[in-house]
Image 1 (spheres, rainbow, N blue to C red):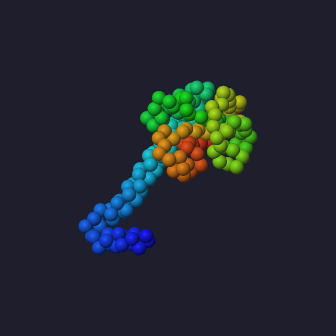
Image 2 (cartoon, rainbow, N blue to C red):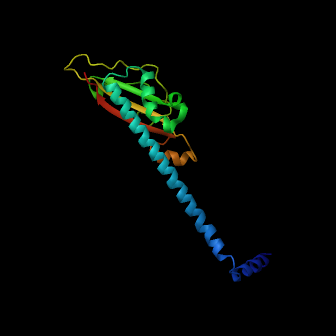
Image 3 (spheres, helix red, strand yellow):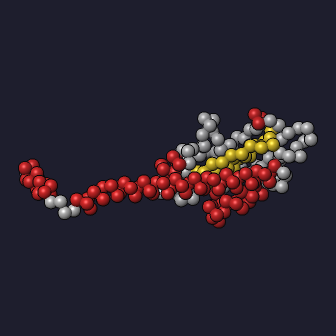
Length: 182
């Protein structure tokens, strides 16, 4: 029976009519897979850049005292991030705001960042408390660390998105630290 299979296969080795099509099928599929991966990488990088820009604009509003509540902060981020996030931005955006008299004093039990320094699924929740961020006096600085996470809007493969977002999850992450102005 094994000899019969080899005879059938040997007939195909002599036929060269479809060699180009077979080569294209082998090489073309890999080519299209690479093109799709580059497209997904580019799209995720655009989303990350847009989230960074939106966070920086919202942090500036927190810094000058224009935003003082969690709802106001989410609205400020989503105002610039809506193009990527769509209408669900306010319900899906998760944030953590930490403040203190110096950066080392900032603590938040529901931080997005875990003990190992990575993005944690348990910390991905919208805290109900938004700390009062004001300077107590002209000489005493108030430092703020703001972190946001947003689920990747379009996911072809969660393993690929975990690699692209570089935090092991399907979440875009951005952080900003600043000093509140008087």
